[in-house]
Length: 186
Image (cartoon, rainbow, N blue to C red; front, side, top):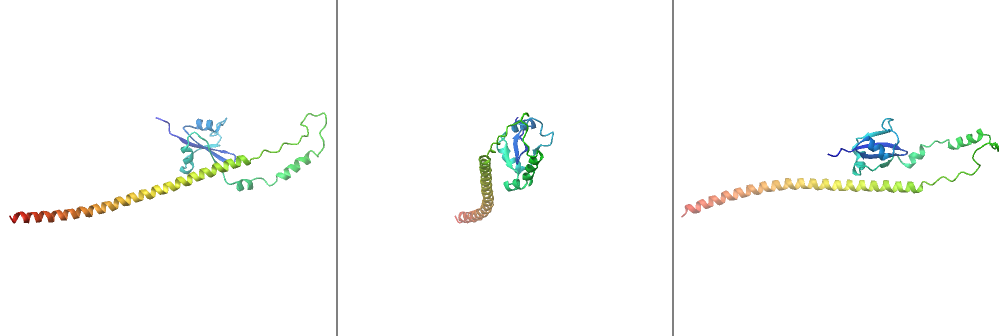
């Protein structure tokens, strides 16, 4: 018998990573974790049906879900980034380094890689998951409507059948009485 799937979650940056597997060890392997995230409290088992739906639909695959919106993430950034860089420059006094000391050459730092492609891909994935969830919800609503209709048809049929059975019973009695009178007439 196959082991029952459990859903586990851990935080990965601005996302939660969910995976449906049979054990904590399998969850750690799916996340590529080097240490025991459960022991440190960085990972947990999830039992909420809303959160377990997507991972259980695709066992073994890590499902990432954004924690908040981009605006919330940007709002949480510290406001003093510019000041801290200025303080860092003031600490060394802007003095040139001694020529004899080993260190990096004063080459400009390369431009930070763009997250645009990653953000776009994540947005498309999130949008696709939402569209799938919406479509499933719509179909579930249709299914419920059909189930309600079937129940109502059953009730209506039961009422019609009872009425028709009474009509047949009454007609049979009348027929039998008429046949009895007809035979007696001979």
